[in-house]
Length: 240
Image (cartoon, rainbow, N blue to C red; front, top):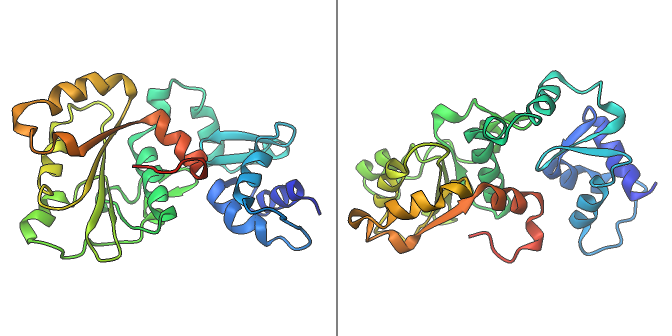
């Protein structure tokens, strides 16, 4: 069996579609296939871009052309949504899920607020991509209470927050920055994820006097860059 046939077989067994993560975990286990490469994940990413057999639904989610009319209803809905303007297609929860999966890829413990966990992400729910139900008691209760609504938190192996992320689609960034301020005494990376067209607005707010102590610690990451990393993380040296 050839490598591309292994990818097709893996997708067929999953209903005609799969996330890249699913392919990484399962296509390499198909018997009778030799992956004589040090970068099998890169081979899988190359294979799914073969338009003879596959098509992309969203970054990180691919399907078989031969199954286009036989896919589950939730996947068909995603295909229909992909034809809409980007502001309607890529939701807040979609980006939360991408950030969570990147955190898992880098072996962090991943937390998402309980009120978001039943929201949809690709072919699953956000609860399926977290590894922490509750934040560790790494500091005072008041601080944990104030940060537990942050969209995504990556915790390191010692139980401290390595990075915090807020997805800002339309609000004015201040609520997110106020949450970040709670972690000023920790060596935590702080990331705002938003549309690149909102960078100027972000810079205007982060330059306000009240945020001067965290100004140089908050990173602005646009949607496009996030999707590129998620689709092919191994071509980058660093994420943040």
